[in-house]
Amino acid sequence: MGGYARFVWPSISFALAVLIWNVWSARRHHARALTRAARAVAMARSEES
Amino acid sequence: MWTWFYRLASPPYVYRTAAALTPWFFAGAALMIGYGLVDGLAFAPPDYQQGDAFRIIYVHAPSAWLSLFAYTLMAVAGAIALIWRIKVGYAVAAAAAPIGASFTLAALVTGSLWGRPMWGTYWAWDPRLTSELILLFLYFGVISLRQAFEDPARGDRAAALLGVVGVVNVPIVHFSVTWWNSLHQGGTVMRLGKPEMPGSMLWPLLAMLAGFMFFFGAVLCMRVRGEVLSRERQSAWVREAVIS
Picture 1 (cartoon, rainbow over the protein chains, first blue to last red):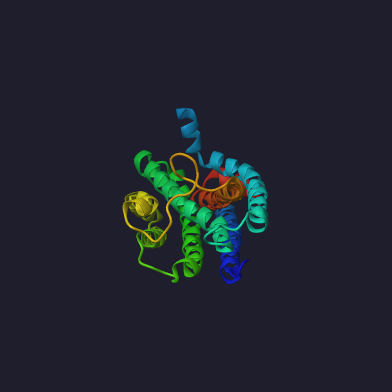
Picture 2 (cartoon, rainbow over the protein chains, first blue to last red; picture 1 turned 90 degrees about the vertical axis):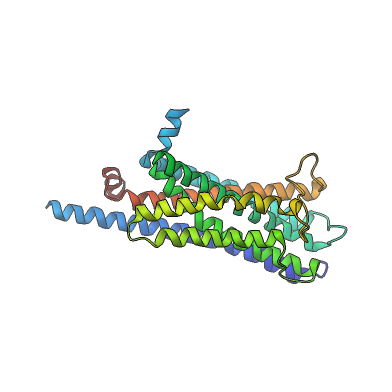
């Protein structure tokens, strides 16, 4: 990297870490919402019965 | 056109469409980012002035572009929700905020790492850097404001309002390098006339820009699904979706 490796590779690594965080965070966000929705459905069912 | 617009206001339609689009967006992102990174890091020639340090552009410029795009989308979605009372707009605005904040942070960190060898400092109170930092604080403000109210509907409205007001910072970030004297270089791709880069450097950059946009689309769809589920969890269609 022509003497610039200590700037280039951390930049690439940080950007890739942001991409990975976004996927992890979006998956967790959706999974939590699904759990909450399932809990709401279960509560509604128990109230009906 | 209005039929399409009103279909977008339907939470089950948005939920299903987002689910269908996610894998396609991820595939586009993987292809474009894969090509852009390999070509940009291994095959593009070094810059005649900046040497190999210029390769930081392949992650810095797409991050900076996304930071502005995500904010604009968040403000437009918030405005649509405020004006037409379309609740999906709040869901899209809430979904876009953390993604945009993360890419603003990426733009600041990678820019800072690029600035050290080129300007001799990691940070300067330069118009472009300062306005981008303000953009990050605006994102934090929007995210915090949404969570600050006990009533989620009030939080949504307040956050959307701040988002709409804060959009004035987007053209300031973009044009800061032309309006004021700046350490930051001027536009190289988004300019009138021909881009200033040769094709061997430009193609991987365009691929990275497209890849980051696809990636944004994919994670936005995932987050919008989560937001829609959370907001609609008492409705019949969510009950059916959860049971199936």
